[in-house]
Length: 88
Image (cartoon, rainbow, N blue to C red; front, side):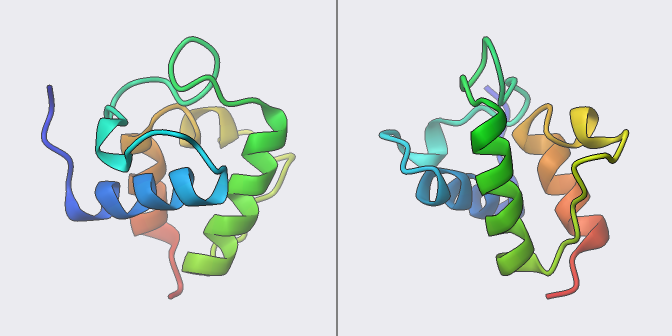
């Protein structure tokens, strides 16, 4: 089990809160898939999560961005994207 960074913990808490998940943020493995076999999120969850990330961190995520699959692939990738692109 990999150790989460402070930002990964923060983003995990945002995911749980924004999507009303019934699990603890700390239970989200940083490198596990967020969609499909991993956390089991779907496209509606992605939209809700993008809105929450935009509000929390000032990110501008676009549905047609070719990098979205990588950005949303895991908590670690998503947190790295937030760190690099946040305006808040």
